[in-house]
Image (cartoon, rainbow, N blue to C red; front, side):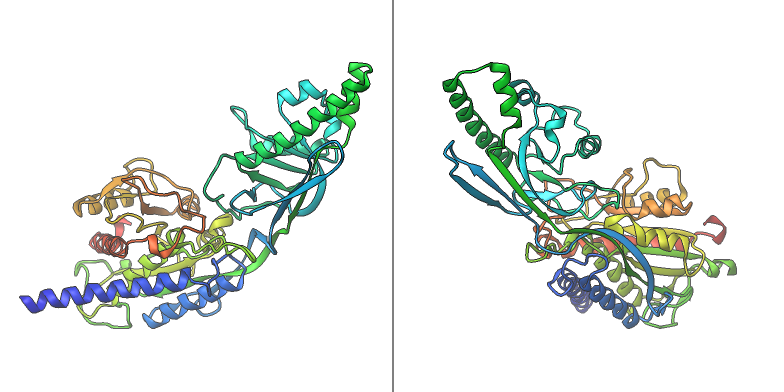
Length: 483
């Protein structure tokens, strides 16, 4: 009995070591944030293809384990810069401030074009319009700052209006985050650079503009003259703040690849054929069924000459969990074979539009009967709750998962997501979108440099892998006609 317990402890430690190794590579500098279309993502895909080969899975792509597809994303090709030259007094002396990307400002990739712009700053508030007589035509050729978002602020409509009025770039206050979250979703139709800025940066620029404007008003009062005429002159006068933006943001379609491997029905991972088919009464037709288990391996990429974005929780953790499931299926102690094909997909392009999942749903190497997607796990010391990617009970696969996980003491949450599972559902597939749900306060590290492997709990990822393995076994016990 003592030797059995020792063997189990050793096996668990070995599994955790393997999970740790996967996380270290995927979040390391060689993978460089795994942004689709980059060398870092290509190196990560090679690592994952090798892992599938080592586990004995059959290549299921159109190029060995790879399935090529084009992925659109907004990618930085160089460092982003923002600086402001502030006139300190009416004599014309000035000071220049340079701001820190991701800390003080960040692009709003979904609404922003790239470009280099240098122009006077105009502060856009109701108060500013009343005080200076600011007119829509005064915005043309300017960089506009919205220093405080009003209630019901419509970001997209505001950007469109600004571009229509000839604004050359837009700065919008977005609170005081520790880091601005990075995104890579974009559009070729974006027309002007759009930056999120901290409240403190916005306050600084507003104060600088107000101080210089006040000095100008004092000088005007000393000279006398018509008040209305002075207001018109002030509205047309050079801004006391000039802003320069260099945002090398490029929206492109680039060749990328999913990583696909197949574990045929009746075969254990590792290439072994021992054991019994589960269950013995399974219809032969079950052997033609294919269940996909997927996780996206792409992330948002390290900034050029800037912060690293390891992407541990999002979604190296999901990839590591799927690999842990495969290793469990290949374990010598496992004697039961799945009576359906298991298609393993490590998918690209999730961060910019679910492109890898859309491609797999449209062009599966075999017709799919169901899909189980995993995104985000391991950020709490135990797997207390998991989302199912469904809003309510009533779907056979979600109900089976709920019963399985609750039997393991895991709370289920009926929550839908915007991850790759959405692409499978939209294609009409029976789908689960699994991911850990927070049951205690935790830092919002996703899409920031703080999403590192060190914040993850290996034991929780192992729990997730065990739970998914239990679900696969429950799925295997169902008659073929049930799915």
